[in-house]
Image (cartoon, rainbow, N blue to C red):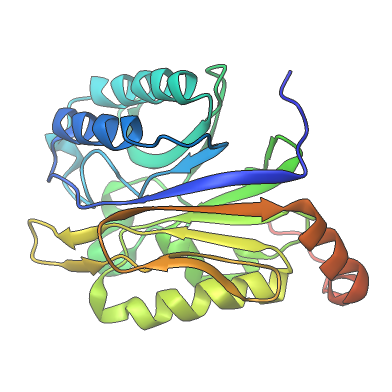
Length: 260
C-alpha cells in the first residue's frame, strides 16, 4: 500500500520526439530517466511520447502499445515513481490516444483523450474517450487530461475535489499563448495545481513546438517553466491546497452539473 504524503515531488520531461519510432523514443526516455538522480514521486512525459502527434496510427505496430506499457512499468519500478504519458494504442481494431498513469507497483490507470483535435483530423482516426479518470496517488488526487482537452473548461471543472490537473501535450508554437493562458486559468478557476507537459522541437509534418511546460499553484502562481529541452522539478504541497481553499471558499459557489 502506498503511503499518504503531504508533499509530492514531480518531474516534467520536456523533450523532442522521434517521428513514429517507438523503440527509439523509449531508448531516449530511458536515458533521460536514468539521468534523474534525485528522488521523485511522479514523472510526466508528453503526449504521444513514443511517436509524436501522428495521424497515421496504422504505421505503428499493434504490439507497440503493450510494449510501451511494459516499458513504463519497468521504469516506474526502477525509479520508484509513478510515470505518466500518452501513446498510440490499438484495441479491438480501433485506435486511441491513451494516457497511462503507471504506479511503481506496476498497476496503472488509463484515460482516452475526450476531445480529439478536429483541426488535424484526429477525430477521423482516433476514437474519443467518454469517461473521466481520477487517480489517487500518495494522498493526492489527480485528474489527467490530454492536450486539446485544455480548451474545454466544462470537462476540466473541479466537481470532484481533485488536487491537481495534469495535461500532457503536443501543443504547437503558433498557439502557445493559448497554452500558457489556459493552464493558468484552469489552476485559478479550479483552485488546484495545474501541470502541463509539452514537447519541444519540430515534427515530420513541419510543426514546431516550443515547450512551455509549467506548473501553476491554486492561485495561478507559476512554480516552474521552460522553453528549452530540459527536465523540470517542483513540489506539490497539500497544505497549499487546504489553506487556499479554506481561506478562499470559491469552490463552494461553483455550479453543480453532471455531464451526459
